[in-house]
Amino acid sequence: MSDVDAPVCWLCGRPLGARVQQHHTVPKAKGGRSTVPLHPICHKAIHAHFTNAQLMRQGADRARLLENAELAGFVQWVANKPPDFHAPTRTKRR
Image (cartoon, rainbow, N blue to C red):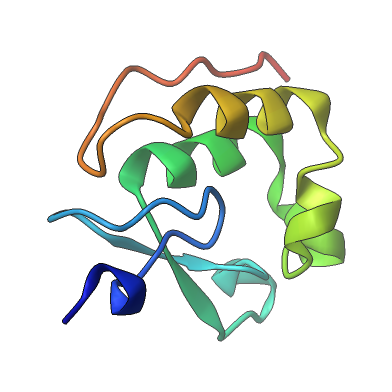
């Protein structure tokens, strides 16, 4: 498989590494079935910024998620990191 055909993360667009998580764009608890591949750090970032209710309303729309300034900043920050990069994810207090 060439780099052009390598699977990429649904959120950040970087090539996926050894660890891949499947994210329900509409939470499973809210009836979602479709999943997309994500880096673990990207998956944690989504859930740190959105509740299941919010994801139910907009989760399948990547562009709407990236309207959140903090998540967009995270995607910009992680853009040049290697595929298996990991760091603690800051969570919001709800």
